[in-house]
Image (cartoon, rainbow, N blue to C red; front, side, top):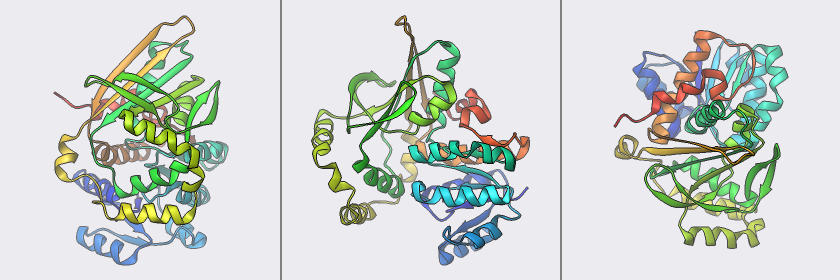
Length: 344
C-alpha cells in the first residue's frame, strides 16, 4: 500500500525515513521545500511530492492515491488541521509525531468525521506519546478505580530544533493539567514534587505534555499531571516568568527565540541517539489512597519516534482498523511500548 512521510526533510522526518528503509519500505517523500525533498528522494531513490499545506486543492490531489500519511512537519498546532482535513476528504489514514495538547484535542473532535471517512486519526505516534500513553494504559489495567494519574519522564537527550521552537512558543501559554475531567490552564512550574523516575529521586515539575489529553482518552482517569526533572533554579525562573508570560506570546519575541534556537544543532547526534535513553514513570492512585507505580527505560526519544511512527503505520496498513480517533495504546495495545524498552 502507498504511504507518505510529509516533512521528510526535517530532522525527525529523516530518522523516520531511515528506519522505514531498514524494513524495505518505499514511502513517498513529501514537503514544501522542493530542493530539499527532491534531493532527498533522489538520494534514496524514492518518489517525491512537493506540496504546501496551504494549497488545499494541491494537498488533496497529492493524497488522492495515498493510503496513509505520517505527518512530521511542525509546528503541529499550525500544520495538523490542514493535513487532517485533507486526509478526511481523501480517506487517507493520518498519523503524526506531535506532543501538542491542542492537536490531540482537535483530532479527538474529528472522531465522528473519521468514522464516516473510515480512516484512523492517531496523533502522537512517537516519543510523544507512545511510552507514557502505554504506561497510563497499563496502570489503568492494574487499578481500575484510579482517580488520579501522574506520569513523567527523565531524558538527557538534546532537543531537536523543531521541538525547541515549539517549547519556546508554548511558554507564553503556561502549563496544563487535567482536573475532574477537564483540561485546566495553570502557571508554569505549577507543582513540584520529588520523583524517582528510575535513576534516583529528583525534583520534578509539571509540564503541559500531550498525556494531559491522551491519557484521559485512554484511561478515563479524571485527574492527570505530567512531570519532568527540573533544578530548583529552573523552577524558580519559570515561576517568575509567569509574571510576564504575555511578553512571550508577542511575535517579535518569538522570532528572536527562534533565531537563537536556529544556532543550535539540528538534534541529538548519533552517540546521543544510541546512548541517551529515557526513564518513563507513572503512578495511579484511587480514593482509598492505594498506589500503583510503573517504571520503564526506553530508547532515546527521537530513535523511539522513528521506530514508533513506522511501526504504527505498518499496523494500520496491515490491520485496517475501524475509522476514528485513537491514542497509540488504544490503536496498538498497551504493550506497544515493550518494543522500545532498553534491554540491560
